[in-house]
Amino acid sequence: MLSATDEAVENDLSSPDGEEEEQHASVRRCLVSGDRKPKEALVRFVIGPDNRVVPDVAEKLPGRGMWLSADARSFKTAVEKKAFHRAARRAVDVPDGLAVQVEGLLARRCVDALSLARRAGEAVCGFEKVKALLKSGQGAVLLTASDASADGREKLAALASALGGVRPVGVLASDELARAFGRDRVVHAAVAKGGLGERLAQDAARLEGFRDGGGMAGPGLDSQDSSAGKDD
Image 1 (cartoon, rainbow, N blue to C red):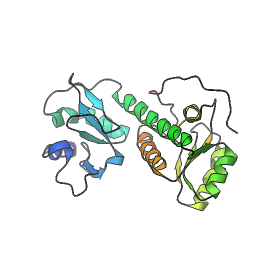
Image 2: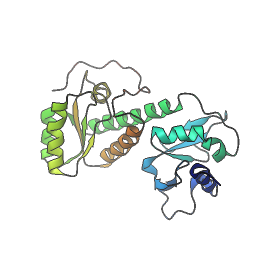
Image 3: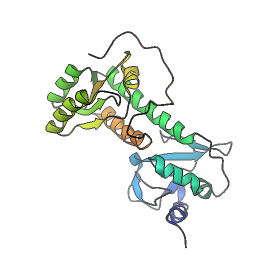
């Protein structure tokens, strides 16, 4: 009898890029669970020219895609059950530290989206500016540093909860938030409604699956010199 993972891989192989004539192109099947999920809840992998498994978090690399639920447990199971080998129909190289690489790539996407939102005038940082954006009703994402004090997190979280429609994100550390704003440290930030806010919320949800409680700094982010300035 096939295990759940074996069945998921067998089903995934029945059509290109992990699809089985899905009614919606945005739905894919997880290699491990066999569940059909929105692409936003999954991470895509491809096999590179060197026969290595390569994460494709932006979903742009050529090749047949293999989709996995965006969490460390699913990734561990995929490696243990050789799900990548079976999906590729051959032995492939799963590099050590691949999960850490995925985490770093997702963290970079979050920081990049926040930086783009800042340059577009759709993101602010600092307690008072964040509070003002939330109160205006235009806030879509509330970001609080994972290493922030409980008191600071709770005040804005309570406001966001009371207003409704605001996605809380606490998976990025203060230095990661700071990179997006060119500051030394950022504890509170918010993004207005729009496409960049939606992208950030989706990538943050995927990143959360690879971080234990949101307390790790993204290993894939390069150290950068920040301009002077502190979160107000």
